[in-house]
Image 1 (cartoon, rainbow, N blue to C red):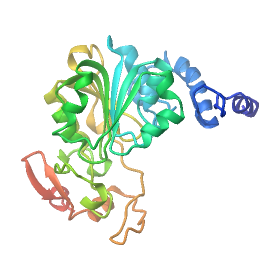
Image 2: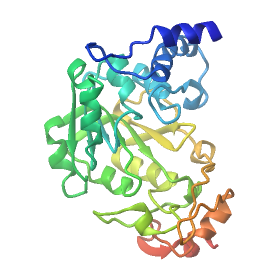
Image 3: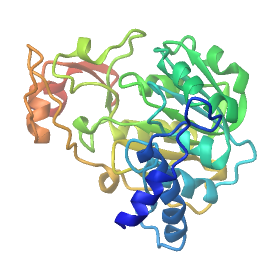
Image 4: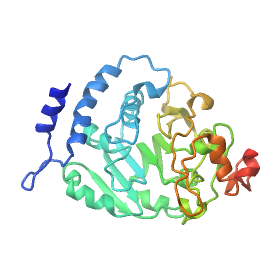
Length: 309
């Protein structure tokens, strides 16, 4: 194994000053090349949960492997993706689709770092990938996506805040696969989301940094309303949906079984010191005065009122 890694590093396709190839770090190159072996090994694995076929190349957790498996299960005539919330695009849900599967795509983020990275890495020259710098809201999302209108392959949303509201607002595209981040801190049962604000910012909403996004149960219910089947979650915090008319025999996943309890220890006190809270109950108590929207009755409440903490 050591010899394999050393050989991979020494032969990796990291571009030099006069090299026109794609720029990848040695670690990225190893992940990229080893993913082909993982993909072959997992093709005949019995799949009880989609996490069974997950692996990581450029995604945060194991979303890359899950996506590759899903695009073999779902017929996708228009191999186009949209990803909302990408930071600099080094780590994303769609980069492996772009590089390995040669899909075309549009990525959007309020920061311009991705535009720089697409140029420096030469991804924009080798592949059909466009970037729009925009703070995406429910009012502008359809205008921003209008150039990709219609039936597309995949939509990924990860904005650490009003993800629920953005998915609900999308009308101009009809993705066959949807990936959207859920908030583990809200537990597996309650249907809650943060209230909509076009300028939502996680720390400003509550100093603990724990109250953002939407619960898994709320996403599954919204998916049902929009005509999407919940098919499972990654080992991290992403939920996967497939449009009902193309879902075929893919089983409907169980929310309780698919929910993952948070392992992140990124909580803060009022002075923004890390408190390293571990247990779910403790995290909910830490944000008990934060405001959420209880989708069961459409009313804004505190986390303490919703979860009884």
